[in-house]
Length: 149
Image (cartoon, rainbow, N blue to C red; front, top):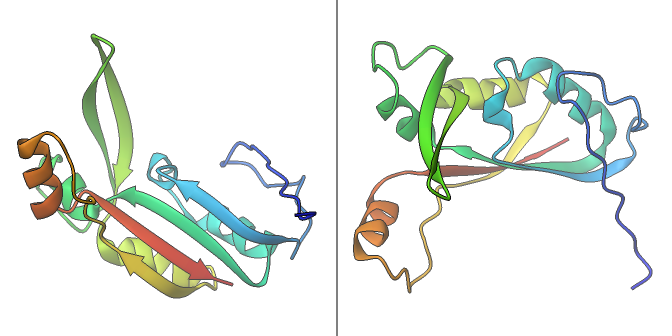
């Protein structure tokens, strides 16, 4: 008790001017980064904002799953892919950038981060749909990463 968190929202293509250097303990980016083609400027800004020892914790769609949804002509490039989702009976198209595993980690290392943890999560027991449970247990869907300044 007594500790407070400050929550900020920002355009991730712009400098984070509202955040002083070395002032932040943790940045959480859940299913956000894959909407940016070039991670370099944002990761440099996040590194600037984080305190020494501060962490960037993020999740992205797994690079293998993204590649399977692409035209599969070149795994090693960063490319824009599309997915259609059912949103309450309406089809919505999501567009995101898929990148190879090496591009994920090279971008972090080039920004000065150390990789602290990598997870390819599976669901907890109890998924009601057997087919969804099978897919989530046998196909890489998400990649979770913790990187430290």
